Amino acid sequence: MLKLDEIQKRLLREVADLHTVPEGAYNIRSNSQSAGRQSTANIEITPKTDVSGLDIRIKPGTKNESVHIPVVMTESGLKEIVYNDFYIGDDADVVIVAGCGIDNCGTADSQHDGIHRFFVGKNAHIKYVEKHYGSGDGAGKRILNPVTEVYQEEGSSMEMEMVQIKGVDDTERVTTAELAADARLVVRERLMTHGEQRAISTYAVALNGKNATADVVSRSVARDHSYQKFDAKIAGNAPCRGHTECDSIIMDEGRILAVPGLEANDRDAMLVHEAAIGKIAGDQLIKLMTLGLTEQEAEEQIINGFLQ
Image 1 (cartoon, rainbow, N blue to C red):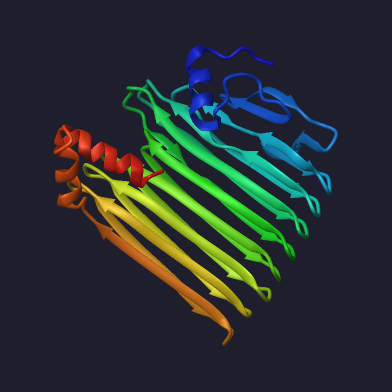
Image 2 (image 1 turned 60 degrees about the vertical axis):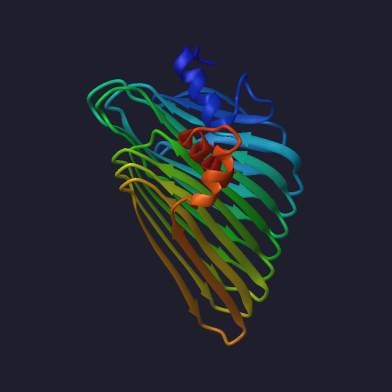
């Protein structure tokens, strides 16, 4: 395993909660190189030969194992595209932790585009955690553009936790999913932007099988002059249930656009969308300030609780 400096170690802690080399299967990518890789008896990680990226194959029936594939970048001006494919066998139940941290102290933009495809077998269950984080005092931007494609077979379930709280200047997240009968998808997005940052989140979920369900929820805070767009569409192509929700706090001169979309192509498709955008309620601030907090401290407490 390549030796990581303190900045790289800090980025790993932020995006993957890694303080040491993880147990189980992992691939740590640092400045476009593999800093360490390990497979297990049930999870095989192999590099692709035609493009930059990995094939991760999880054997049927694998239980209580994890895969860590974090990315860290500390070279200003570095730009990369990475393709990772996950093949999850029937009846598997695993946790996959991804995410990217960029520290840019230079003048050139640094950018990571990660394309992840998940092929989820029958009755398999996946928990997928993807965190994005940026730091560094350089003028160069920290840019992250994740693309996630999910293909779920009958009876499978996938829980996705998508987090971006600090330091990313520009991001365009695109997530698509196709669900077969009795498949279940749950997405929880947490996002905060500040300064001049821009964040676009686009979700397109197709419920193709009977009793397929999807629940896509975003919570976000836009501060300063930042801009956010949440565009979520659920298509019900069979008797199914779908729900999409955007709940946002707007502050300062921030801007937020919510575009919920529903498409019912079956008379037994039950689809719901919700969207709420507003400022922090004054009575919440007053209540916390009466306990001795300053207005700024009260705002931070409310935001932290909102994004939990």
